[in-house]
Amino acid sequence: MMEVSADHEIGFVPAFVIGTLVFALDSLVFVVVKDWGAVAFHAYAIFALWQGFNAARQYKSLNA
Image (cartoon, rainbow, N blue to C red; front, side, top):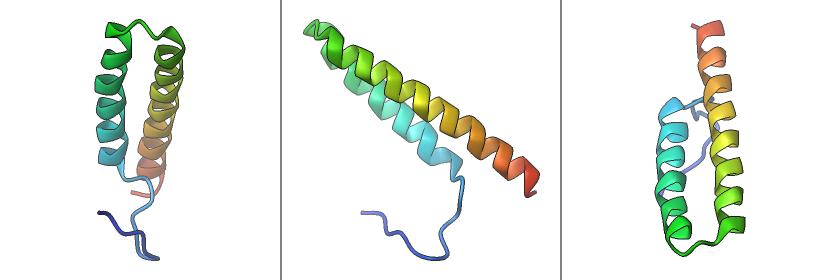
């Protein structure tokens, strides 16, 4: 279990990559059972994670 503390790193890029991979694998289950509403939700979540990933990379480059 991960802990959140005051000294956590903002824009931790691997978290976005891991989250995207988990959502992509989870969405395959819904593709198999043809639950298109869940597939659409997962597609939106993956898009939002991608946006967060890009924002984290930009944040890191500004504060490097």
